[in-house]
Length: 76
Image (cartoon, rainbow, N blue to C red):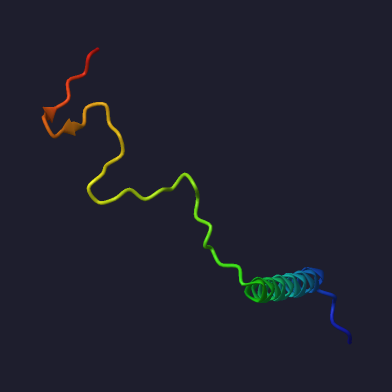
């Protein structure tokens, strides 16, 4: 006597297989992209131009920052 088909299990197996193939393909594409990037010699040497580092003794400008003469008064 033959078994009754289990469509849910078959569909799950197909979907699992498809997902596995997608993951393998994505991983291969990422590896290939990394190889191409390494071959070009690209590194992340071009930092964001808006992300400029300030020297240790300087702070981003504030309206109420202190000056060497004392605290700066706000004219408003």
